[in-house]
Image (cartoon, rainbow, N blue to C red; front, side, top):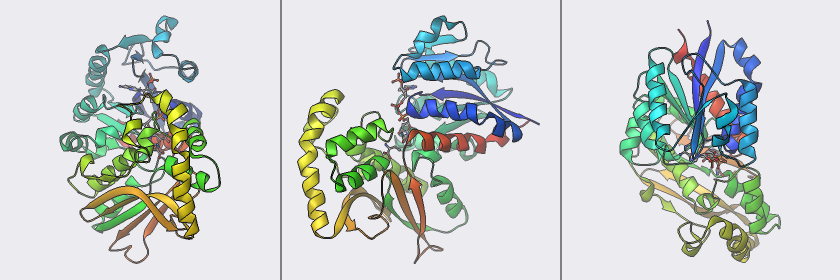
Length: 379
Ligand SMILES: NC(=O)C1=CN([C@@H]2O[C@H](COP(=O)(O)OP(=O)(O)OC[C@H]3O[C@@H](n4cnc5c(N)ncnc54)[C@H](OP(=O)(O)O)[C@@H]3O)[C@@H](O)[C@H]2O)C=CC1
Ligand SMILES: N[C@@H](CC=O)C(=O)O
């Protein structure tokens, strides 16, 4: 018996495109597992392409590769309008069409909505659709889970139908591990770690002598940063991950209850300075300050790490001086590390460590999540 899983992908940037490539290259593995991933629609910030007949057709792999190539060149999906292989929608039509597809497919097979955008615009639609029978949601995007508690509650109200492993730790098994610990009745009382691939990479590279501005630019081209790297440098991206973990532990808090430390001043923020200007002129202004802070830590025999701490009612993220020879201090490159303390892991924490950012590992995490819900699509 084959599970045919219709997929709608929102966002075809670095992660979304890598997901499509993984889907194509894993076809033989999935076939052995009795699973067929049927991509029926893809959207970017302006347009959406969908198969001509949502009930029966799927995008061919050649079309998906063409789509990836087009998006890698910076073009809009709208340019596929004349290909004769898809329907194209834009603006308000997109959300209406997705809801329409989900309603049509719910009787037959269901639909998996995969959010690989970094947008808040997907939140309302996802939180409604997850409640539609046989509709599943897989997220790399952290924003749906870090907006209001009302949206959060709606999204997690169907736990079998939502997966979001890649929202924290990219491909690392963080969410599934915590869920297992919680389900076993083992109370988690402390989580501490370094949860930003970008900030981990930046700190360890600046330590080895490279200028901050150069390293941030490199992190962006390696696919570690958010679309606007200030989301990482402000600490907000880590704060979102901290909020996802804290809410998973049952803390009824919002983003604004988290103490966050930014690496740049407010006058360089997204509301004040255009991204291009920040990358070209803003970043180099920060080089000396960051180097000075790292040198001071080094003269104490320490290193700087951007640390996330969740403990009882405390939830904070910021720079800390840590011993070079500690689990956090030994981190290199884009690795994340997470220490979980619970009744069973009281003295020696359960430690999860590995690559915490990058298109490849993140897309792999998303794909594993999609496969994890395959049972819901078996007939
Ligand atoms: N990179 C990483 O290491 C990790 C990333 N993530 C998360 O994965 C997500 C994607 O990251 P990444 O691929 O690097 O980001 P990119 O900026 O490369 O891609 C974002 C994509 O989302 C599209 N988009 C924007 N708004 C919408 C919308 N309203 N509806 C549908 N699509 C939209 C963009 O469209 P357009 O092409 O038109 O601009 C673009 O294709 C982010 O939420 C990020 O936090 C999570 C873990 C790790
Ligand atoms: N920008 C993030 C990517 C993963 O969420 C990071 O640097 O960790």
